[in-house]
Image (cartoon, rainbow, N blue to C red; front, top):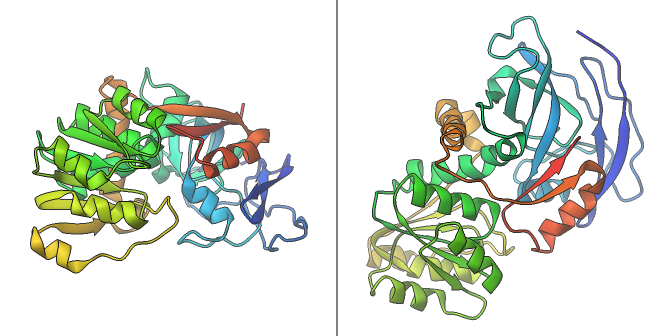
Length: 351
């Protein structure tokens, strides 16, 4: 394997936390230490791989997720020691493989998942966390699939058990995951979708993406609108990503034996569940934490990504890329998401 390094460092401001982003070429050894700026928490960083089946990938695009921003702010469920390189998903080309690697070879186009390190020119991952990009699928579209479509697949299939003809209510309907839920629910599961979002422009995007109806919850009563749109019955499934009062309204919008799946709290407020609402209509409330499947049930985790790649190749789904930023524009990308300007998926180009 090749040792050596070509390091560039850049500080990313994310909320009140500054993170040392290192995009480097490393294979084994240790990343050179660097002193973080005032206000950053010092910590050791290493880009070496402990995997027995390491693969070095030249990254083309990295998907930016709200979880990356929370991690940089120290607010994510999984804590990282500073300095660290953010980035959970990427698309790229295999540059080098370890001796025990058989699934991919140099030159293969791949999409990959890693807890951190993806927002870099190169990264090293275990071959288990790579999937080949099918012919006809672009690097850009591939970078969108793991988190958003992986989440949407597990929500609708594994957790909600969505059936053809059922009605799905999705909040944050113009966000990356919301649009993936709409795409899959309509085109794969053959369900109807009511998309809820916070502006007319976002509602319009959700409708163009396949939703049957939209509700602007910044000025409409979500519960009343869902009842009106379903002739008083309510939604069979609610996919909830906002939290706070929107969660409660979504819960109240469910039909008899409806299911609500919590996937995040973009509004910043984690709600409590009024248990009486579960009782009155025999509804079920559950969560879906995407990355936990990687540890607890990897075959299910892997299958969701493989399915998304296949659907994309077959033209059954249509990933929505809202904005593309260059690596040196990472601060702008983070702020674009934090300020709720984003619709669809934000990706960062390394080329």
